Length: 443
Image 1: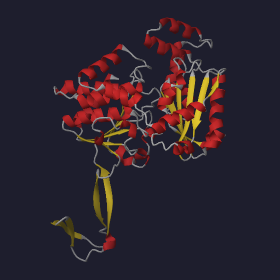
Image 2: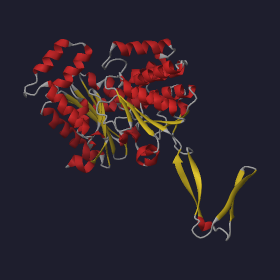
Image 3: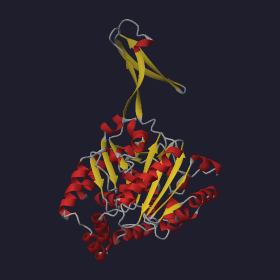
Image 4: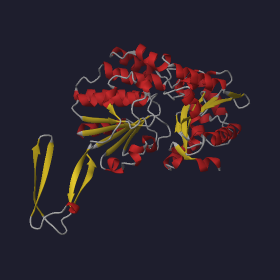
């Protein structure tokens, strides 16, 4: 990991024009890490563009310098006048300004050049470094990735992420699954840039953005792994001026009335299946529109309420935020692999907080099928002793480590299990994407 970070520091030092991107439906860690890094890079005289085609989520309006993130990629490449010289040759090209207009003159070397000999085309984007932040897969970048292949092939492509199912999709990959958030990793990166250049980079705005990402992804330091290093970084960010009270107020305490009504709907429809330790609920687009809810995030209700119900180990909320687009949020207790549940639908995320998306199918047709597939998975047994042991070891719970390891009854050694996990991750199959065709799920 240190080598990857050093490679990124070198790439930043050599780059002139840098593009920062994050996943669709951005959250506080996504925008916090983008804004923190963007502001720091500008201090070392880098030209930086930060793009999110989803615009600015209303609930992230408190982040400092949010105007640094644009919702459009346009204006970052040349407009080229292309001339076909197969029949008529160009002698010279010149231009002059006339008020607010620029006139381009094409002088032929012989026969007059015709309008049909010319056309305007866009050149390549002029970025020499593209950094994807908090993206478990390239697919999570959305349209900006699928519609602009040249953007990534013509620049050094970097991924900075902390999700365990990241398949290392970029040219340079810094993936730290022990980090509680991408914002924490950006703190480390800015520290390295600061040490290398002997220039003070951190300020109040950078610190506030990074602390917002760290607090959001840990649920206010309630899910981890919360290590002494994580708390130390949080303390240092507060010393740098990060406004912790403002962050907590906006992330956890400030809720518009339509959002509270949405919570009520989700909670009133919640169904608890004690034999599977599963609680789940669903909310349709019709419900969102009936309550005139602009904010369609369900993270808070599942984090604050559903996942804390007595006897629950798995909590799921299905929401239709756009027509025929179903989003699934999964939360689990320690030792239960929520990312594996999300993977049933080609999603992913963290062990205890993950999600998925399914498109092009009516909500009423797919809701029961999703839950049926989750039930089937849970009935087979959802605890992974290796994952539980790893997590408990990080938390210092050595007794739980021993108990988890005793559950290994299939005869394979820990080394063999890890070897198989590594081989499986190296296959880089399609389970890491966040979208699953409805036909695959229904079949």
